[in-house]
Length: 484
Image (cartoon, rainbow, N blue to C red; front, side, top):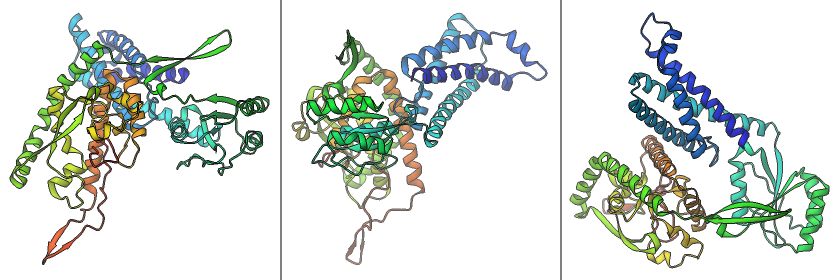
């Protein structure tokens, strides 16, 4: 991983010099040689500064692109926020030291940098995908079942740079192995005992065994590990404790004895203040941009329904109840049409919650707030999501989790958000949410009109298909009718 990270960073730094040279070339006066303009100006100083700034940002914010699974919207959002920070620091530094820089050259440089950085990461992904398809991967088997096993297999599939492919699931006796779509293959659910597993591994060419849920006895596990060592099969263990999802795990070794250390993650006072500052800086801009849409929708809803907004009780940080606002649109109604349908399918019904963000009840990014009726059924582990202020959007939502997904799946993303929180992550998730809304709007515009519920000569015709054209992602899913 470190080698890949350094390779991507090296390509980035080379591209910075190339991008600035191209920007100068695009803006140079006619008849002036490029080398003269480049060497006799202050642009070498700018390149050096840009290299130092980008190396610092890349190291501290993990801008390599493969954290999270080589997802293009995620890569684009991370690089876009990183380039914006780079340009901001460059402009501030140039102002302090009074460097004369053409603003048009900087615009060209920023656009070329964004394009080149995304392209570098995309080529890196294609390289590893091609190697995976060519068969140059490590074949792994997962011993265990349940959500953790499925989640592990899914994450391995999203990371081609690991050069690993899950080829078999082995379930404990009396249970079914997990089934996943895509490249992951199941071993046919052979509820095998540990003594039969080495033969199974040889048949499937397994090179690594990942133990997720060790239900066998200690003696059987010792025999299994001994057989794997004789066959040259690597053994990996996944701890089962949910505390790991709100703690940062660190492996220590004391004279050959492995020790797993779990460092608790909590947002300090300074981090909370910084998060609030980001909310107060970004939310007014978003509210200003959305104000024509909000005012138009509010007026239209008031004229038709005599009520533009709904007030719903939700639980905030530490379970404190607050009133959350949204447009007065029933998103579960299959007969929605016109403005109501567009707002429901694009999740724009949540725009009034910008007021909740300004009031401090919510944040721009965080776990979606849920009603007290559902919060009282949380497990102790799920209550950890109440450690932070709830958000307008979150990590679970940009990963497409909706009503059909379990609360446990959403909570895992919420815990990951709490563990990895930074102002940079908040900005990236805001950009990813905007990207998703644009994609959904384009899909909605190109989709055929949905059937409407119409009254015809005293007879009501129901919609043929009431499923939404585009799955909601800006809401926390729930099996309750209060789902956001």
